[in-house]
Image 1 (cartoon, rainbow, N blue to C red):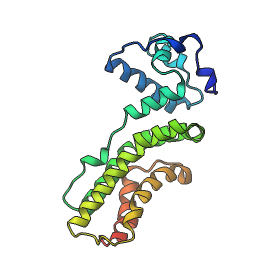
Image 2: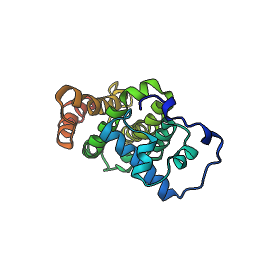
Image 3: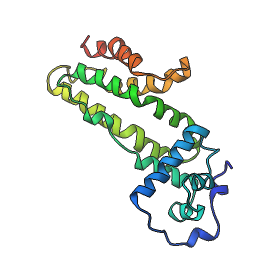
Length: 204
C-alpha cells in the first residue's frame, strides 16, 4: 500500500481520540520507525503496525488519521540533541567527540533517512518532522560548540570556515553510504575531522 489515501480510513475519521499511556505511545512510535528502517516507508501500513503491537488498527487511526501523520508524530517524539551533551573544554576535543558520537548513531539514522527519502520529498509535514527530529537539534548543538570555541579564543569569529562545519559533518554522514557503500563510522569520522575540519579552523 503506497498511497496516503490508502491509509486514510472512512468511518473512524470522526471518532474521538482515545487515551493511551506514554509507554504505549512510545511502543507504537518505535514499531513504526523500526518497520520503516527494515521495510521502507511505502511497505509500512497502519495495519502492520497494529498487528506488531497487538492493538486494533482503529486505535491508531483514532490517534493519527493517516500514515504520514503517524510517522511525523513518531519522528518528532524521537527528537533529541545528542551533541548538546558534548563539552570537553576545547573546540578540537569537542569536534572529535562529535565525530565519535555521530559515528555511533549514524547507521541507525542513515537507514531511516534512506528509507524516508522519497516520502519526504512528497510530504512537507514528513520533511519538517525529519528535520526537527534528526537535523535541527544537532545543528543547533554543533553551532553552540563552535560558538564556545570562538568565545574561548580558539578560533577567530571571522573564520569563513565556521559556517560550513555543520554542512561538512552532516554531508559526510549522508554521502559516504552513497559513494562508498559504507556508513560513516566513528573511525572514519575521526579521520575526516582531523584531515578536513580541524585544519580549516586552524586547529591542526
